[in-house]
Image 1 (cartoon, one colour):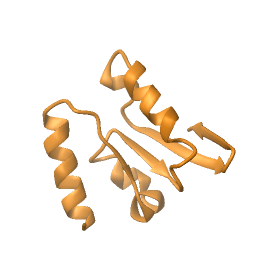
Image 2 (spheres, helix red, strand yellow):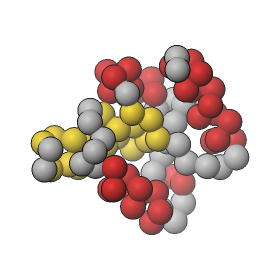
Image 3 (spheres, helix red, strand yellow):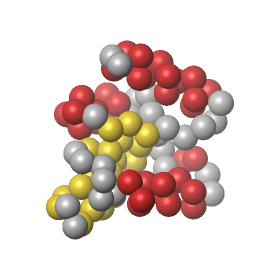
Image 4 (cartoon, helix red, strand yellow):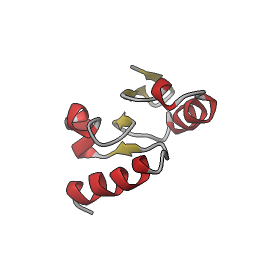
Length: 82
C-alpha cells in the first residue's frame, strides 16, 4: 500500500476519533511527516514495543495524551517512548 493510501486511511479513522499508529520504513525515516497524519509513529521494529503502544492507547484519558508520540525500539529487549 502506498504512503498516500496509508495517510488517507488514517485520516478516515481520525475523523471518527479512532486513534491511529503507523510504522514502516517510510514512517521510520520521516516520522515528522507521518505525525501529520497519525497519532503515533513506531520507529524501527515494533515487536518489542507494540504492547507498550497498545497499553498507552488503552490508558489514555484523552487522545491528546497520545498525539504526536514517537515510539522507538532501542534494543530487542528494551523499548521506550520518546
